[in-house]
Structure formats: structure tokens, C-alpha cells
Amino acid sequence: MGKGVDMEWTSTPITTPITADLVRGALQLEETDRGLLPHRLPSAARVQSGDPGVLSAEAQAAGVRLVFRTAASTVELDTVRTARTYAEVPPRPDCAYDLLVDGELVAQTTQPEGDVIVTSFATGSVETRHGEAGTARFVGLPARDKVVELWLPWSEEVRLVELRTDAPIQPVPQGRRVWLHHGSSISQGSNADGPSSTWPALAARAGGVDLVNLGLSGNALLDPFTARAMRDTAADLVSVKIGINLVNHDLMRRRAFTPAVHGFLDTIRDGHPDAPLLVVSPLLCPMHEEVPGPGAFDPTALADGKVVFVSTGDPAEVATGKLTLQVIREELRSLVEQRSSAARAIHYLDGLQLYGEQDAAELPLPDNLHPDGEAHRRIAARFAASAFGPGRPFSQ
Image 1: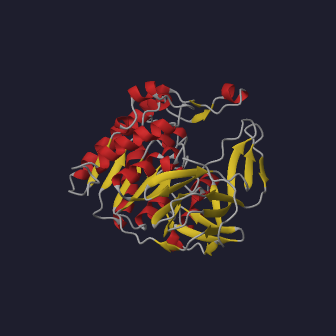
Image 2: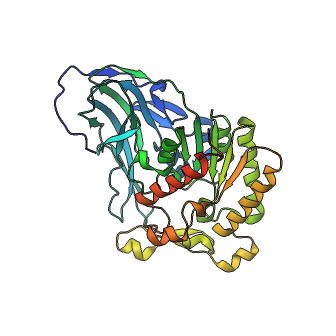
Image 3: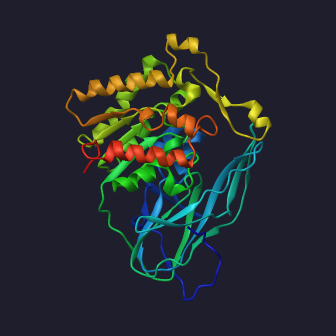
């Protein structure tokens, strides 16, 4: 697996307009004065969100990719990216662009140009450092007819400026089942090794389906506008991973939680009455298993330039209705059992089957909250077996 390197074109490059038939995984494309911005929530949802965190997460290009057929050996994509970092800690590595040929990852590169938004934990100040467009370049691809997928960074906003190749390209008709998934930052990508190796991307490839990833970092909160976006998105398979953000934010109590899940699922069902619907409970997160939220940054770790999360809740308050991950799993299991009696295609998957106590011992969460790249691969393999395997909810 190589990185794109700078070299001269051996023939006159062909510029192809970036149009909707080349873009997968976005619900809407916005024309801006700096390029085409993919959105993972439609404008109606963005208007109703009322939260900068939602707007930031949905504009990050998790699961968004360009897909086309070509004999090109060189592919260039000009983009204006927007990365986010914190003043008190070292910046995260630039998120990668992955290039797949006929479903196999063959190259990965980064594009460090563009804007950077710097937030201070201490003061709350936000500084935007503006930059120019840059180029993600891939060379040495097999000069034969092939399907190319260019996956965009999962943790950055990416404005698409220009696509160049050394051979013509054609859109690829949609011929596979579409899997629509919603979850938290772990579904969006967290600490994955690249945009095509987040656990949903890997599971989709294993299942032979086309992914629409509505993982919204910090914002899997049963928002009605998200449910409506899912209702209105064409899909053959639907899954929702619910829990961790509700505890992180200490957003609601047990009394409100279960009716809110019912309402969220009812809205999805309005648009997908017969599609298999998989409800996934939280992965193991030791700090929130028995201790409610809210979650917070560990000030001691911040002093050392590291981001580590801690829970600040009081376990005694669980008795009065505060949510923990254990409580949420109990409620979701019971809710799905109740709804399955109506003979609809709804299923439950315990998140502990994807990442549990033994996994935490072998592959601990680096920041106490998010899995690393190896854990993403393990979660993906287990989800693929549990969802797409023979006789499973998403089997063909």
C-alpha cells in the first residue's frame, strides 16, 4: 500500500465534472464558492439541529466516496479540507484518502492543505486558520478497466474542487443493496486507520452492500430530524446503534429513553416498513458501564497534552433514573422483544458481542471511549458475521 507522490503527467489530464452520479454516501451536495460540499444530513435536518456539533459532524465525510469505472493509472482530486484540533494538545494526524480498486485498498494518501479550526479547552475560543486547496494524488494504478472508489476523510469536511485522470471515467450504476446505518463517533470512524477501514465500511465490504454512514460524532441522540432523514433515504437495510452519546451527554432519564427510542424507530419505519431493522446496543465502555454521565475530558491528561475521557456521574443516581450502558442494553433488549411481536423485521444485537470485556483487555480503548484501528477490524468482522451471515438479519 503506497502513498500518492508528486510526478508529471505522461498524457494530457482529463478533467471530469464532479456530479451526484459519482458520489456515494452523501444525502445532499452543496455548491459553495470553494467546491462541492457533501452533507450527510439534508438541509431540513441541518436547519432544525440548532447545534454546532451536529453541523460539524454531518459535514465530515465519513463513508462518502467517489465511485467510477476507468482504465486510468493516475487519479488526482483537488479538495479544500477543514480539519479541527485543540490548542492544548498536539494536532491529530491528517485523515487519509483511501483508494480502492475493484473493492481492494491499494493506496492511501493525505492532503494537508486547507482550513484548520483550533478550539481552546481553557478559554473556549475558536480560531480559524484559512488555507488553500490541495491535491490527493494516486499513481501507478493498473491501466485496465476497473472500478475505483476514492474514500474521503471520515473526520474532516472536504469540499470537492476538481477530479483529474489520465483516461475517461464513467459512473457506476447502483446495483447492490443499500445499508443505512446511524451511530456515534465509533460508527463515524473514531480512531480508525482510514476512511475505508472504519468498522461500518469494512462490514459493508464484507456484506457486499453499499453503505450510507450516518454516524454522527457525539450526536447519536435520538434526534427526530435524524430519524426523518433516515426515513427519507432510500435503503434496503437499516441499523441504529444507540446509547453511548446519551450517557456521555447525560441527556435523558430512563423514563424518557424508551419512548424516545420507540418514536425514533417509528419514524424510520414510516419510510422503511419492511426493511430489516437492526438495533445495536453499546459496545463495552468501562467508564460508563455502571457510572452515568456526563463524560468529560480528564484535566490531568490534558495537562500532559493528551485527550482522555472520564465519567463524572454518581452511580447512586441510577436508582433515580440516570442512564448507564447497562441500563440502556436492558431497555433496548426489552424494547426489541416487544416490537418483534408485531411480526415486523426488527432484530437486536448486543454490542458486547462486538466488543466486550475480553476485547477491552486485549485492545483497550486508547482514550477510554473510542476503539483503535485493530478494534475497528474486530468489530467489523463480528458485525458482518452477526448481520450478513447465513440466516442473519441482513443475509441476502
